[in-house]
Image 1 (cartoon, chains in turn brown, purple):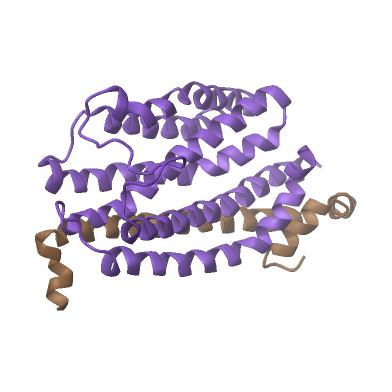
Image 2: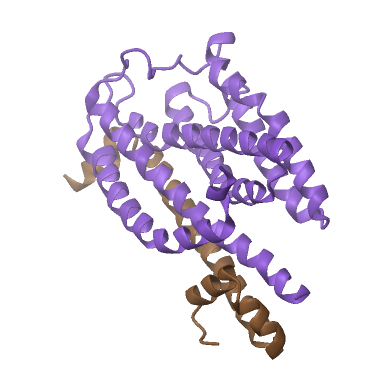
Length: 76
Length: 235
């Protein structure tokens, strides 16, 4: 029965390769985008930590900066 | 209206939505794969090779849908001068490009047992290849030009001019003699596909749409943090 599922009446190589290509492409794009997101978050945390007190107060008063920090792993 | 396109609002929703969308995607994809690979019947003529349809057709639909959306957003950028729309279109492009590639590759794999060839310069396949090139050009524009105004303008022009290709993809099977069959599914008429095949096709389309939405959410946040990183340096 398993060999029937794999061979799919002789079309197995075509069917499985099409599905494998799709799933590998999904995983690759997901991990690439996730990596880019982590990288940008890390860069943001570094830049934020380097701010002077005056600039920090200006930045932290803006909702968008607070929201990005809330989603980052670092506690600043 | 553009209050809804406020970056802070989108970022906040995005961050909360990502896990939910990922979870829904995994569930819908699992059901879709089970249906597509094991439960749906084989075709009387194409036998089991018809199962490739469940990845090929949704990919083609979504790639065309995303490019149409990018073209509409790009036109809106010119009309309303809202830069956040560029960020939205830029975030849609990677999944659109990936789905075009999947449609081309799986179409080629399906073509071998069905038509006896991996590739043919058929009107539908050629117009899909042009769509892939348009996606590549669109994405490359942001990498090539460092001047944001210039890259925004050029990418928008690519998307608007590229929109001409959308009706060509859709109607190529009616306008020319191609290897592809005419559309089997219509929103206005009864579908030519039996429900035993139509249901898995709809489930797989939903899974693919969820995936592109997930990638959009992640990419949008990445691009917005990138913009805000530059803003921090200018403070």
